[in-house]
Amino acid sequence: MSTSKSKKSRTFWMIITTLIIAIAVVLIILLCKLNVFRNTYSSEFNTQINGINLKGITSAEAYEKVSSYIADKANNFSLTLKKGDQIFIIDQDDYTINPDVRSILELSDSNSDYASKLESMGLISTSDGSTTIAFNYIFQGLDQKIEEICQSIETPAIDSTITFSPTEANMWQITPSASGKVINRDKLYSNINKQFAITNNILIELELEDAEPKISEEYNQSLTNRIAKFSTSVGDSTGGRKNNVKLALSKFNGMRIEPNQSVSFNEVTSPHTLDNGYQIATIIQNGRFVDGIGGGVCQASTTLYNALLLSGIQIDEVHKHTLPVRYVPLALDAMVSGASDLKFTNTSEHPIFIKTSSTADDVTVEIYSYPLDVEYSTESETLATLSPLPDRIVPDVNKEYTDKVLFKGETYRLTYPRGGFDVKSYLITSRNGEVIDRKEIRHEIYQPQAGIVIEGVEDNIPDIPIIDDETATLNMGTDFLFDTIPTYVCP
Image (cartoon, rainbow, N blue to C red; front, side):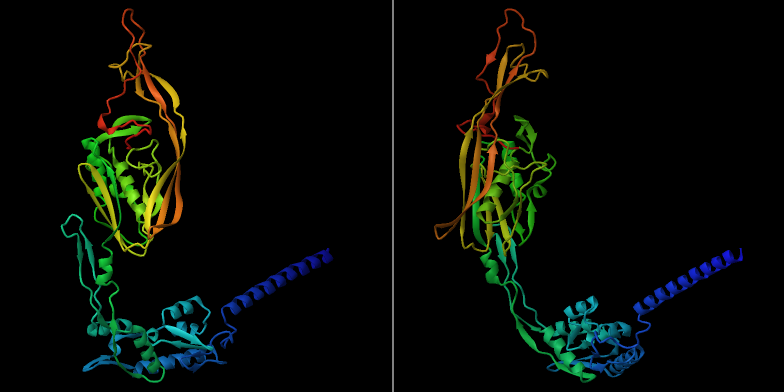
């Protein structure tokens, strides 16, 4: 029994001893990570800060040296800026001393992210194991005071401005640009830091340099060049449809689009509602022509789309219609709806300006910008014509056409079968009349359509003749033309 107790006792103390050793090892590792046992700066770090040699000394000694250096600078520091008879003296009320000496010591580690960030800001510089801390990092608030002084004696350059008002007789208003006189900030701060390294009494003669405007009057004048124009016809459209096409395009009239700016047609023109000025006109819905709000908006998007192509603007999103439209060649249309949009981005180096206009017969989009060194044109190529689908007989169960048909066997043709088309479109680039590129931009298939024939649903009554009107069509007015290539009005 005693032997068993002795073994248990030894096991217990072995476990306790192992735990104590493990805890001690963990503590040593943590303390090492916290630099408790490191009392000198590692050779991996820079060993000088503003000429103070830190090599081989303890952290406490380094802290004392840097603190003493900063205190001496603060107690005796003066900065005087002169420009002719004007003298600007910066005193101790204009700045505060960076209170965190330890953060300045840590800047000796040039590999740290913080040091890299400050170096990119010009607040520190490192070279050959030495770190130089800029005066405006040690003395905070000097930047604002120096900037106030500089601005008080500078004459900034004046940029030309351009205002585009296409509804005015003189649609371009361009203000003149002017040169100026400014102080080179990089040179000024470099001169201050050079003196800061050797003296506490800094005197700088401010030097003004010529400054040219970033935007000249000549540049803005070059932006008034028309680089593209495209028109479509609305002469045979109804009043409501004309209104909608013109209203949607008017939303773009006078628009300025900056380089890299993207635009959504739907965001600019929506909502397509009565409250927003859109009217009822014929639209295509489920393969039929019906009245709806905003009919004709697609012609506005298509007109804009083609003008953008001719100006070399990047098209980000475009969609074909379910059915061909008559006002542009195939595969050059741009259908918009709640789920479909026309989007584009100005990828040029210059802003573009959009002007839209209309007459009783046409709507037009013009693009103005810096002159192009090439010319753009478009081409539509029909690869194949697809045969029409057979008629689809639709019983008039909802009694929508009782004025046309009533009894079984009576028919009324709502639409004719229509062929489809397999089409490609191209953007052609020319220079001085010579084609230098022909790029396919779209490959679209307009599916063939079945004819729709409405049939009555009532039982026949004897002695009443059956109506079989195979040639009748709905009265579409002049909005619809039926040629070899069928034509439709888009929503």
